[in-house]
Image (cartoon, rainbow, N blue to C red):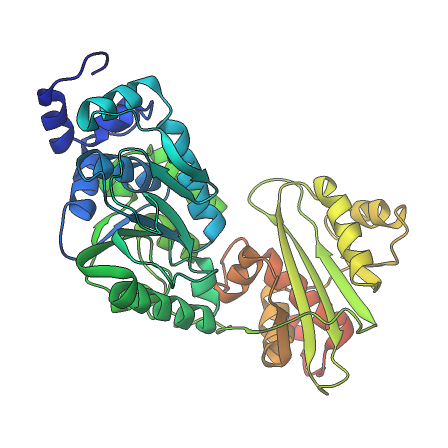
Amino acid sequence: MSGIYTDQHLITLREHPHLLGHLAGKTRLSQIHSEWILYIWDSDQDRCLQAHRDSYKTTAIMAIGAMWWLLFHPDDRIALIRKKYSDAAEVVHMIKQLMKLPEIRELFKFAHGTYPNFKIQREGKLEFTFKTTSTPEGSINALGIDTGVTGKHYDKILCDDFVTLKDRISKAEREKTKETIREIRTNIIETGKAVGFIGTPWHKDDAWSILPPPVTFDIYDCKILTEEQIEEKRLKTTPSLFAANYLLKHTTADGKLFSDPIYGKWVYSIRKVKAHIDAAFDGIDTCGLTFMAEIPSKPGKIQAHGKCFAGNVKDWLDVIEAEYRKRRCDEIWVESNTDKGYTASLLSVRGLNVMEYHEPMNKHVKISTHLYDRYKDIEWDNDTDDEYMEQIIDYELGTEPDDCPDTAASLIQHCFSTTNAYEDALWEN
C-alpha cells in the first residue's frame, strides 16, 4: 500500500489500522494490534486493555493509533498520558518523525486535501495544518501524571503505563495516580468522549482497581515471544515483576516480610554516613548499593538510599565512588566471601575507606532478622532506585535477585543493629 491512494485504501486502513504501522515501517505489528487499536480508540466508552511488556502495545495503540485516529478525525485534540511526562513526549516525538515519511504524507494529503505539515512542533505538542479548528490544545499533546494534567480539555485521551513499579512500592504514589485518573475521567476529557487505558497491573489497590475491567493479553496469549525468550525474562526479573509485566497479575503481600516503605528526602548535612556494596559479576545477580545514616533530629530513625545496578561491578565503579563522595560517606563495607577481596581492592585504590569482612551468616536469616528488625525505622530517600525497593518488597525465601535486601541487611548488621539475639545455630559454619 503505497504511491497513489484510493478510497479503498482508506476503507482497508479503517478496518485494519496496523497496516498504517506497516506504511510507517513498523512491520512487526499484526492483526492483533489492529484489534487492540480498534478496541481502545473506536469507542465512546472508557475502555481498558492490559498487554504484556514487549508486545508493541505502546507503538501500536499509542503512536500508530493516534495517527490512525487523526486520519479520520482531523480536528480532534488528543492527549497521550504516561506516568512520566518525558515518556509521553518521546511518543509524540516518534509520531512527529513518522508523520514526515513520504508514504504517510501522501496518505494524509489524499484523506484531507493537504499535506500534514506542522503549525506547531515542539516538545510534547504537535498541531497539523489539516486541523481546521482553533484551540489552545494541539492535535497531539503529551501529558504526565508526574507533572499534572489539569487546565486543558481533549476529545480523545489515551493513558499508557500510568501504573508503574512506583505504584507497587508506594501507597502515596498509588493514591496520587488514582486521584489523577479520576480527574482525567471527570474534568479533562470532553463530556461524552472516551478515555483509553493500557498497561500492566502492579498492586491490588493501584489505579486499575477504579477502572472498568480490562481485556487482557498475557505473554502466552500473544505468542510474540519464544519459549526461550520468556524463560530468559523470567530468570532476569523478580517474581512480582515478571507477574506484572508478562502475566498481568499483581502479587499479594501474603507471606512477604516487608510492606510499603516510608519515604523521605535525603539530608546531605547528616554525617557518619555508612555504605555497603553487594557486588555482582555475571548471571542474574545485580549490584546492590546502600547508604544509611542515623537522623539526629529523629532518635532511632535511619535515612537510607539504595541503588541497583545490572551487570559487572567493574562497570559501576565510577558511580559507586561518585555516590560515596556525594553523600560524604565515612566507610563502605564489602564482603570478601565470593571475590576474595577483589572488589575491596578496586574501591580502596580509589581512596574509599573500605571495611572488608567475611560473612558467616545465612543470607535469609540476615535479611529476616537485621533488615526486618529496623525496617520500620528507615526513611528511604525518594530517589532510591525503584528496582532496589522492588527487590525488598518482593523478598521471600528463595526469591532472586535478592542482592538489594542483602546489602541493606548487611549494612544494618554491621552499623545499625539494635539486637544480638541470634542463636549460633543461625550461622553457617
